[in-house]
Image (cartoon, rainbow, N blue to C red; front, side, top):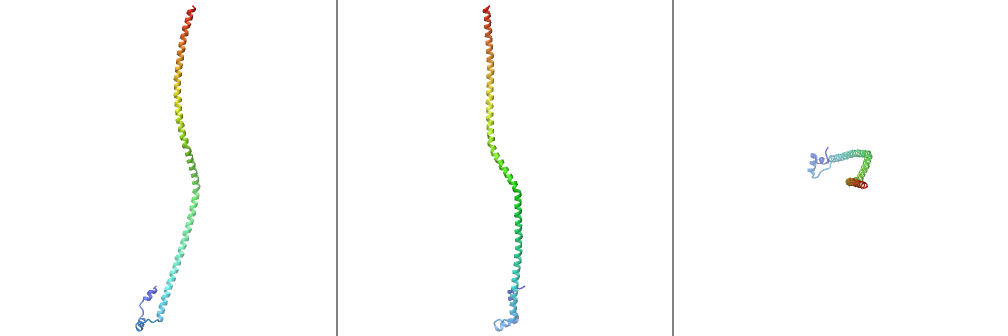
Length: 169
């Protein structure tokens, strides 16, 4: 297929060249008109072909875009369904994690209080045991003293008893 430019640039026939050289100006004859009409028709045909192809490409692009939009919409629906499936589990897990965190926050001061009270209890138990030992020491001394005192008193009573017996005789 030739373009208008190619047709116009083709070497002209010797008759036309002769007419140009004889008269000094080109003569318009039927052949030349026919060539320009065919060139114009060819140009119009080419333009129509280009326009038709452009429309075909546009239609194909629109079809592909429609398919892409449909696929995107389907993917969005699938994503929503997946999120709906995992969402209840996430909510439950999140709620349980929050509850565990809250309990941990409550346990921390309770643990510290428990440790403080255990220390206080150990200190009190040690003090109790020390006092109990001290008491045991004093009780044993008291028993010792009471026993010794009783011995002394018995000894004195015996002496008194002997002295009374001796004086009564």
